[in-house]
Length: 159
Image (cartoon, rainbow, N blue to C red; front, side, top):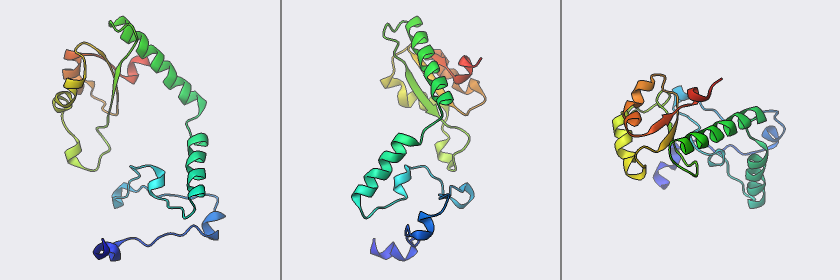
């Protein structure tokens, strides 16, 4: 580790300048290769463990989606549980995927639906209910899932 220390970005100390700033911007510029794909606290270090805990709890308790979005998501969950019951699960259980297709910087992360299916089929029940959250616009991409499961997307609940 000592040998790579000279290549590290200098530490940004949270001094008066930053403490009084109205906004702290943590850059997530895709062109430079800096993406915020981890929890916020991976970018922060507190000498005082109490300050560390306070900050994490503050973010947990106060930074969240507005009620309109939270409630819309809850309505989709209720609808999905109903679909699962209609599809034979008396408890309304369903599985979910979050399949991102359009914003990854690494080409090797763009795997085909058949490979995703192969990777997951051992932990899923045939003909069960699945919700897929995705940015893929061509839903025919998920054809293999439709052959084995009852598949739903956010589009199915719009309106």
